Length: 357
Ligand SMILES: CC(=O)N[C@H]1[C@@H](OP(=O)(O)OP(=O)(O)OC[C@H]2O[C@@H](n3ccc(=O)[nH]c3=O)[C@H](O)[C@@H]2O)O[C@H](CO)[C@@H](O)[C@@H]1O
Image 1 (tube, rainbow, N blue to C red):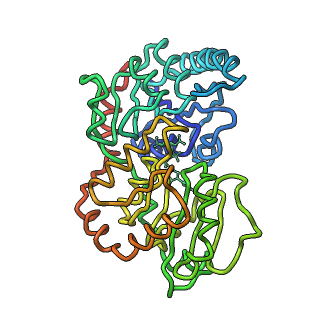
Image 2 (image 1 turned 90 degrees about the vertical axis):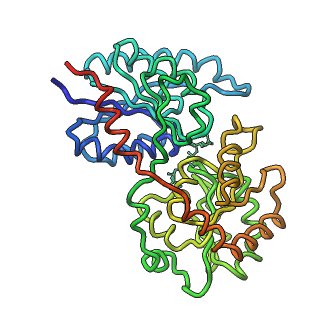
């Protein structure tokens, strides 16, 4: 009997993070892990670094809310991807498929369903994303990060597991981070990031406030691919496109974060008790999931929220100063949060859902 599992998910790091945390646990548990992702997505870069995982690239298409000529070609790519995934799954005969969402997961779920393979889906946001909404009818179970997500799911499929936070993030060292950054111990540090792909809007506002921010703080700025502007380099300010192995140390240095409200990132900040200024992605460029994520955190007292439409240099400065001055108040609230470790629950669910031959 094979003991294979297929993982899928991609498009942005948010759709790979849970898989990255789950992967070593599955391997310890005796599963052979196979990943199906896209040809060019961030998942390929992140997964091929993982030992013992075979990666299959398939074609995929994006389902856009706006006009693009690619909208005519992409349905064919999804069909080709579903055929490719069907063939891979037929050949590999996994016991189960675990899908984290993102567009590449749609053809994999269809290919898995055609092979009658049990499918588990994971949803990080309060409301399911489009790819997961398409996939849910084909799934056996849907794991959720937020308890309230079950309201949007068939009751027999919903399974609340909690937030997955990569273990290594808690092992950062502030001393190593300060040395790496060349920062001083005497000034507080802000970590600003615009989600895993970066945010032009947040970058512009950080640049506009930089001069004033640097009078009181040091700033780590994760800008996104191709967005680093070397002309802005100065003492106390470091820019990165994307950070992998140094992220735990950089988080250990940060006293406060400015961020979009992607579900994985905000639970990571919560688990590390970092007071947050969240600027959720607006409805004009998303389904509004981050607005709901941020509201849920604000109601619990973990953060302040600046709606994207109200974002300006002045507003950002005012809110950052407020959150920094009141940081102990936010930390106290975050200390009360109950963050359970969902990995064991998920492994158990995978074991009990997987096909037995
Ligand atoms: C534009 C978009 O569709 N965003 C969605 C995407 O966000 P996005 O891909 O930004 O995902 P998240 O904010 O949830 O997670 C980002 C992940 O990338 C990691 N990271 C980030 C920067 C970096 O330099 N290094 C690094 O490792 C973070 O630690 C985190 O684990 O998925 C989230 C989870 O479904 C959704 O809530 C977001 O709405």
